[in-house]
Length: 254
Image (cartoon, rainbow, N blue to C red; front, top):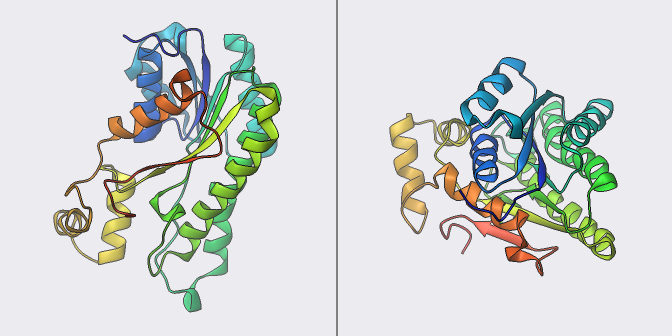
């Protein structure tokens, strides 16, 4: 067990998903108390139970696009654990794979609503109560620093998050709070594999092989590798780092 986050309190959206849960485990192992936020109460309860360390882990059902629910989730975190030091805006959706000339408007709007508005609402309410020395981490993507054909909705949303993080970083610097964006490449989880099968029209095994072939290190990231990057951004190990884009993509964007 580490000590980098001892006494810190974190809130994680998308907390029942693979990256959110792996990050929560890593933060708890490093001494933090964590509130998991997601849409499904059963999934949240199971995620919290799987972490163990019951006094350090709570959960709250909330839709990231609903401001009242997001404010309630932040308030619940502060009420349970006595403050807030870390917020990880991790909830996100992909949408569909389509050229811009065929992009359904409702899909584009939904992706921006969850990925951008959802991150804004967590930032708005978490930063309002975050203690000095705190850290907001906004999960963008490798396609927040590059892009590929057919992913206009997802890539646009992930690029927008860079602007959100940069603006928040400048606004919060006088208060001693850091804001950075995280840019994972392909991760070995169900979310990524669904995207890859949709983009390639191939089986799980074949689509994974195709993507492994274009990642310079030759493989997908493990969720624990992404979680380690989040813990780094949350900790004092990067206390002079704000407004930055931390790319963890196996060289895909190089």
